[in-house]
Image (cartoon, rainbow, N blue to C red; front, side):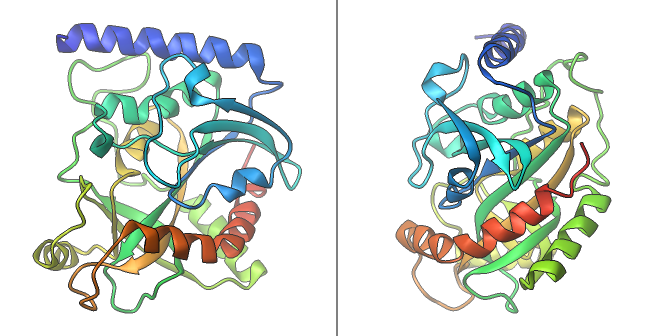
Length: 281
C-alpha cells in the first residue's frame, strides 16, 4: 500500500476505533496507561473494571508478546478513572510503526490528555540493579522508525513537533513526590530504544552507554513521539528487569524479565497509583 493510502486508512481506523470506544466506555478518563511486560497487574487493581479484548476494537492488533494480555481495561485506580492497556504492540512482532502507536492516537481522539507509559528494560547504568524502578527523563530513539514519517497528519499535530520536554517536567516532579510519599526507591535515567527482538550485543550496550543511556528496551519511544505530536503530556517508568548484555556477563532471557517484573509488581503498582492520582484532570 502506498504511503498516502496507508495514512488515509490509518486516520479512518482511528476514527472508527474512537467511535466504537465512545459507544462502550462509561466515560473517557483524562489518563491512559500502557503497561509493559509483566506489569499488567496494575489493571487488575482497577475498581469497577470494564475489559475489552483488543480483537473487538477496530484497528487494534493482537498482542503476541509474552506478558501482554491483549485487552483494554476501563476502571478507577484509587478513585481516579483510567484506561489501561494490558499489553502493547511492538515492531518486532512484525507490525508497522503506525500500528504500534495506533492506540495512543485513538486515546488522543477520545480526548485523553495524559499518557502514563511503562516498560520492562535492561539496565545499562552500573548503579542500577534488577528490580529497580526508573523514572524516564528522556529517551534515545535515533534508530527508531518514526511514526511521523510520510505526509504530516495535520489533524493530529504539527510537522515538526518539539521533543525537548517529551517527558513532562511537572509530571516528573509528581513522580518524585509520589516516590517520597510511598517510600519507594525511584531511580532516574534515559531510556534507549532498540528494535529487537534479539537482545542487544555487549558492543551495542557500550555504545548506548557512551550516548548517555541508562536503560534499554524495545518499545515506548514511538508511542511517546506520537503522544507528543498529539499534544498529550507524558510520564514514564521503566522496571529494570535485568542488567543489559556485557554489564555483568550473564545470559539474558525473557522468563527472567517476567519473573523480575512480577517480583516488583507491588511496588510498581503502588508508585503508579500514587503518580496517576496526582495527574491533572
